[in-house]
Image 1 (cartoon, rainbow, N blue to C red):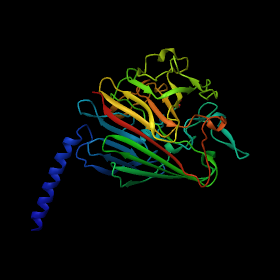
Image 2: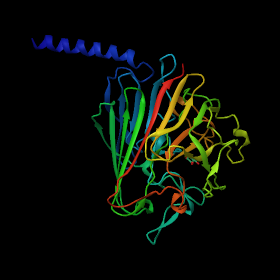
Image 3: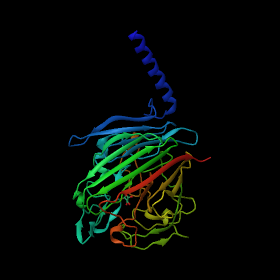
Image 4: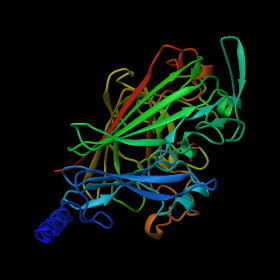
Length: 381
Ligand code: GLA
């Protein structure tokens, strides 16, 4: 009797595996059912275990998220012919992430983007942060939210498999004031959106600006210069040579910054006069922040994959992988050359702590910081 039950169970297992094989058949995705699956990804140098959570939705799309940096390590979505393919840059091993990288897939905080000279004054008190980007503070400092190990637990959601990450950023960490409790929920919705919901609370006033730094290539490889992009932004914030906003809010109309109509990313990139050349600018979103509103639409010409970005944030940093230079070897041995991917970091404007007319980035005790961004995937007909 016992034996028969076991045999039946084993048979059922084999059946389940073969059904799932057709659901998610690109490399490494075999045999996973809808839901959240956990495995060990590696250990940091001080012995902390880093887990990887694999989210599989009902259409077979897959997101792999590691607890180190809350990094989206793989994201497999269908092309126009229904073939799944990985659309984000990243590495095969934890060692490569630990060795240093330009924020591939990571949660960025406590303050995404730059703070001029790494200092600010809040409520009459002066705070000093690390200057880790020339004269400025970038992406939370030397050990930002991209380099810490987050607590993780799957959460129930009708929308799709979901993972909740939590981290307590202690008072004084990287120079910032206040204990900041942060949660980030990643949901891979059954209709192929990666939804990211951030929340934070503090016990002392502090700047907060969180984002995700995924590098996308909708065709999976090659340069993204022929991807077609539209940004729902009529204005942008010009920067100085160190990428700090001048404080101006300038119309894009008729300039090489204008993506209000769909255009190839590379159509005018050679006219930019920055070094290394490329887009690395904050656009002022038409939605204005607060409500979930359209921010961008990008199409990969070879795959037909389309990504639409919706966000509650007022800004989006459009970055074209200008600093990639072929030095990093990513997943499957792919060498990441300049323009191998683009980033659409939804957040508040850079250096807002110094520009009173930019939307405020200050969180006070009793308030709840929230931000929601959705990367919605579909295909062009
Ligand atoms: C952001 C910045 C860029 C660069 C990348 C990481 O997008 O705006 O200047 O620092 O992160 O390399």
